[in-house]
Length: 256
Image (cartoon, rainbow, N blue to C red; front, side, top):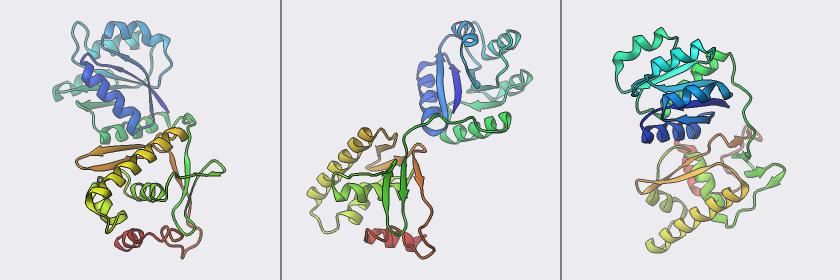
């Protein structure tokens, strides 16, 4: 887990970058500063792996802040962010690890993780967190530690597998209903879907598993945040969710 400090004078961008880094990468934000002067005072007291600095800040630019930190013996990689490309050459003159255009994206977060791995030679040991062990083939199961997960309803379990197999992809609500609530009246099917999503979120919260199920554009996206460990097939002939007998799973497997 990379320990990161962000210095950004635009509060909305500061919050966005902090959320992106912690949601889509192995990053822990140990400090956020809107003022480079505050950052200059506090950074020497903090344990960190990298700095994310905005270049264009009033009274002290990110380039000046980086130079001051180097002069004070702070030797960690610096990632500069800005809305303007013309600062790139100046940024690399102070030995920047990377140079990103604002606002940061999910792909940039992944690239930053890769750059830090190359810089340090290997990824630091991650902070332990709760995970689920999932067997998708043959005798399907979801385990937390040595205990089977107890699902509140059969359809909660089915929807979990469905969203997991479509991880980070938008699943439109009507497609979900067509696959899981076939031949159920529309209004009732929608109610069943909403209630099942609610039950799943509640269960994941009780289990302290950092899976996010986000509603977006009339559908849902599951982000597991690296909290799922998928086990190897029980045998070469094992079928996807074979023990569950879900019709949509057979179609999913055939389409791959």
